[in-house]
Image (cartoon, rainbow over all chains, first blue to last red; front, side):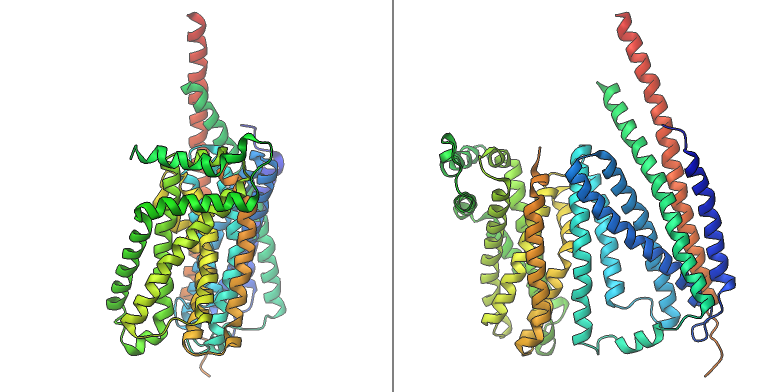
Length: 232
Length: 248
Length: 57
């Protein structure tokens, strides 16, 4: 294992700092929202994690395609790292959204397009890990994983579009108007600062975690190869 | 078990490999038809798969009948949901079986050795899976119509069912090829397939329940369009990536 | 309209949850990393043993 690169060390420290600043901006600096109160502050981390979550899934699909073309194991590690970190962040997004929805919409969950698509997307990537776990040959594992991230990356937006139809045709099911009305609020400039900084902060943290996960991946590969050598 | 193997193995060179000694390959369509023919003739000898799918579908409908208490009022709104859930479950059963048979009897290796493009195997398998699904649907629909006194035989509804089945078989064949090569096999297929096939199922439910509720054709155009878009995209992708899924 | 509803409980729960999950993930990365490093060292020494014993023969 190569020693930890200097830039990564710097990035670690920067990540911790920006996370602290983002938390400060969200919890203290941003004004309290007038209708929903304190819980609205959850929104900053909700959007931050959602952004990197989606970014990671897109990166994973692109890395998957690149792997299929180049057959370079590096892209597979890249893909796994992106999916894993994104799955964690996306899970946070969903739970934060749910926590916010309880006081705002008076329910933990509604079958709204965004919520449903988020849940299905999360399930796709959990299935991805189950698929990988079931395959022993690393090369085959990488190939199947790449194909599956590609399928998932394409079907998720279509799922979103389909579920939207359920609501536009049946506005009575779960009040779309009330949800939109209770969910919307306009941001003041201080809120915008917290909002954009949280996007930036999570991007930095995402890159940092992904880098660590990639390094972990190459260590995994190394150990796997050593095991093969020793057992022979 | 053992006596089936040579039978199937004999079947293949006759149809697929006939022209392998000559330089030119069998044409795409001819080779695809050969694979479909192989699957169908193997199936029509025993009816193993179709009968299992059929009995399973009927059982699912019975369970839904009591779970949802399908009285006249409820029936109106849930018929398409019940039908699609049944088709999806029965579909995974068939997809699992048709791929694991290929794996277990070593036919997949034979197919891969055949001098044809890999996508031929995909289309052959996908179309025969589709045919199995359609056969099951062709039995389930009249039974359901009879049991619940709803007329399901309308051209537009059948069109939706066909489009939905095409999408489901297209993704399902690709994913079952993958899951058949994993350690957990049968267990894994629905977990892989359902979230990815969600658009097909939801759009089909949406379109068919709209039609059953007597909506105008223009009203169900939106889910129908998405269904067609999904079918086209996923057939194209499966066509492109199938090579990577069967490579050894 | 009544005053701003007190929803700070939800907010605290949300942030605690976010930090806990991130913490668990970072810890799992650390744990997996150190386990793998240990494995790698053991395997390295095993391999060295094997090669030295095969030389003797």
